[in-house]
Length: 358
Ligand SMILES: Nc1ncnc2c1ncn2[C@@H]1O[C@H](COP(=O)(O)OP(=O)(O)OP(=O)(O)O)[C@@H](O)[C@H]1O
Ligand SMILES: [Mg+2]
Image (cartoon, rainbow, N blue to C red; front, side, top):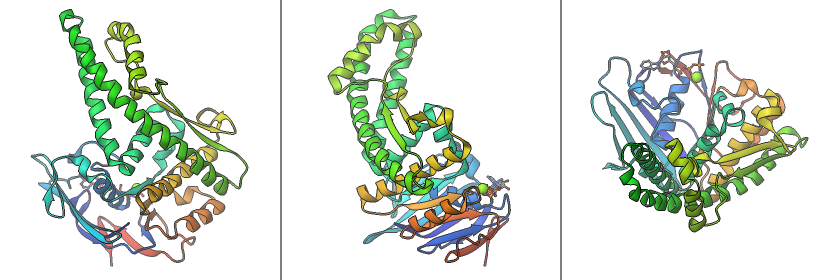
């Protein structure tokens, strides 16, 4: 998989820009606040149908401009895709793939795949379970687009069940409709659980391997899926939801389910979040991200695009070298504030004030 060209119009600080990255490593160099991350953000948007830094599409429109547009041409074995994202200031976004309008943003998932690694991804390792669930959900969605739709349906059912639980305080007669949502949540939840369990198992193996290589084999990284409900099937899921009903009614929210799942990350059996040093946390996060490269490759047959935002300077020489070896077959976009000697074969692009310098 690779990006052949990306064209930005009124996107963030770019009035207009055409960027044609090469097959291997592309180094995007520029001082702070010149538009390096903005460029990666546009690629990310075409992969996931959203920005990695904001949930408000309006933020992406150049100040005062009436709309923003991203045009990406990506190539995978035997096919190319033209993706066009139009973000008007005053109406809903419009996304087209090869000229055809998408009705659901989920249809974008999996067409162009990317793995982004930025300093803020340390939160996967450092912060609470929400960050790890988001990581799981994002990576599963682009690996298996069907998962994205499952998750969307689950979240919708969850919101509706919670609205009902709140309404029951005033209108107890509505209680008869609760089983409808229990049914839905257990049917969808048990499927999500199966996806996550299988994913974490593969991820654990790959991440341990990557981690061994990066860190020189000193410690053992393990990834363990910790579902909130240990339910082997839909019926067990339903029973567990029913058991939690009293508590749910009391707290007027759905207390159990896959929206409460956790993924434990341990180093030699100890929780990295609590015991890992900064460097250990960074290495673990990098190992997880690199595993996502392998996973996508093995499921889809294509290497995703790799984007490394501002991470090179934080890695020591050994980790930089390992990374360089690993990414040889992968189209990679790397941002840096200074020309980096570690990347002799890289094609260089200089960004200044929302313009790519010739
Ligand atoms: N909607 C927008 N319209 C115009 N300019 C914007 C918009 N959103 C952000 N910017 C500008 O884009 C610039 C930031 O770009 P970006 O985040 O890509 O910087 P960067 O090159 O990655 O910098 P750093 O090295 O600090 O990470 C800032 O100057 C910001 O003011
Ligand atoms: Mg940046």
